[in-house]
Image 1: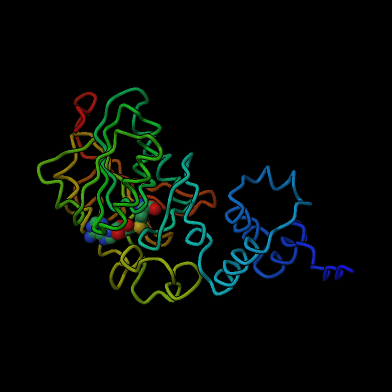
Image 2: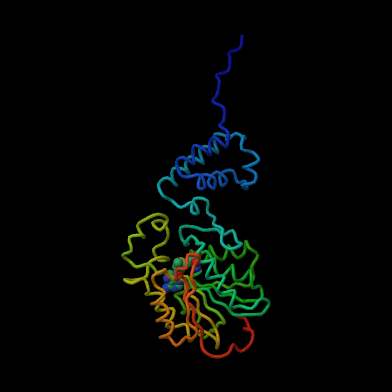
Amino acid sequence: MTTPAIPQDPAPRLDAVLREAGARIGAVDAEWLLLHVLQRPRSWLYAHADAPLDAAARQRFEALLERRAAGEPVAYLTGRRGFWSLDLAVTPDTLIPREDTERLVELALERLPAGAPAAVADLGTGSGAIALAVARERPRARVVATDRSAAALAVATANAACAGLGNVEFIHGDWFEPLAGRRFDLIASNPPYIRNDDPHLAEGDLRFEPATALASGADGLEDIRRIVASAPAHLRPGGWLLLEHGHDQGHAVRALLRAAGLVDVETGTDLEGRDRVGLGRLAGAASGPGSGW
Ligand SMILES: C[S@@+](CC[C@H](N)C(=O)[O-])C[C@H]1O[C@@H](n2cnc3c(N)ncnc32)[C@H](O)[C@@H]1O
């Protein structure tokens, strides 16, 4: 006589797992984490909502749910974040690229004629977000991306290789220090701009991001001041400086840009009409298409 098999709990269906996880951490985050565990695209999940989740995958998913519930950003748990048309690797050494920064990319592209060569710099590139978006949209531009964090620069370099972008050069160093003697048609930066004592630094995703990517002195403007002061010596005649900043820093950034002698100073706003990007140009006519490196 054979012993009857002990009934096993059936593996739960994906849609049931998602419902339960969504109630814990929110539906969108739960879906991102499950897709990451399954290594499947969203379209697959929709077509296979009744598929079972095996025990090993369930365990991996549960571990991620717990970390998310403790506050870790989804982008660090999956190691990926979409920006512009790019799927970027991110690590706790890099800022998680924000949608807001796509506004800076749009404003930069408006100042870089399509099809023309140009020399562009992205200071404090992090995961490479700004540099790689510009390099992709302006394949004839030569983009230099710098960062003081060697670890972030390694992530950015790998992102460029994955995206197949060969028109970006990565250089380690403090703001303009590694760019001595070089001038650009456009310099972009999303530098740290949060006040050191801003309570938001102790909240949400910011708690997990590198402090060196976020905080900038007592008024949040320490790095912007340094960049603006050195920028004119690194711009070609007619060249643009674009700086992302906090929504309450528009007036201060415009004043800094004017004090540095830049002209056509203005502020780009986000969809809600808030000041987010300071822009200014070195006087003089552009001397023709940038020559590249
Ligand atoms: C706000 S994050 C922006 C990252 C990326 N550009 C983005 O938009 O996702 C600022 C970046 O500036 C870098 N950084 C901070 N201080 C720096 C300095 N003195 N020189 C160069 N890079 C610096 C940080 O390591 C960080 O990667």
